[in-house]
Length: 153
Image (cartoon, rainbow, N blue to C red; front, side, top):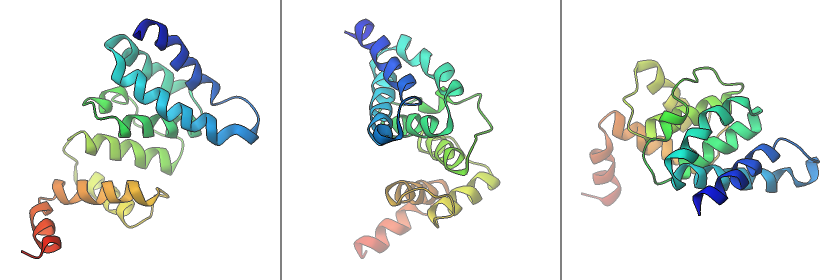
């Protein structure tokens, strides 16, 4: 039930910022999953996310962005619509990737930043860089040429 899950999931997100370093990785992974579930569950849960992400430290924001990127639902970019400044290059890169993945048309500067992500200049891990590469190809209308090249046609 979404009403029961909502406070538990949001508590998991809040808890990721606290506690010993020893279990930080596990708490951050729970934050990724909790954010994804909050976003996918219902409209009321979705409405919690913008306020929650704004109040979290950078590492928690990164985990929350990952949850939104992993979601199959549309509209993840709306969660971060009013946030234009991020505390780190990684959170900034992930926010750009989320916006681009959701189909937002990127301007020239954003395309440059996306190409930098692809080349490894943002600190994002390889799976995210591959997503960024595919999105870059789609945004620059090179995706069909790339597919034809890969498939040998």
